Length: 157
Image 1: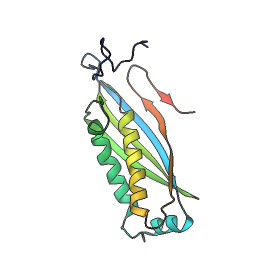
Image 2: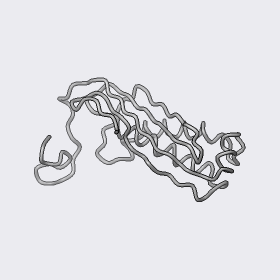
Image 3: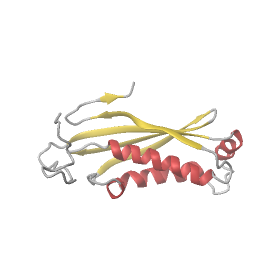
């Protein structure tokens, strides 16, 4: 690890890190988060009775699209040729958890793409169900695991 921030040049100006000399390796990241809501809102989403339609499918597509556009949203993030993105949901007693997986073969990781997919999927769940519950809470967004690259494999405790 370097003591100098990697996204600052010698003069202190922000710049995109040159990853051209790094080896292209298989890289995968998984991120997650959750949204809590009223039992009524959860039941409506589960039954497909939300006013805006199929909440879960729309949130899945939004998450996938967001992962593909991460470099447009996050400054200094490299545009990546993603080989796969998946967004999955688990029903919980008081809400829905989201798990987003992104993968690529390249010189830099996909953690931000997975985090972006999870975040946007959660925001879309909120948007699609806000008529049912405006007090929904989005939280616990975090990296769950990553593999590949110089730093190797990592898994959240």
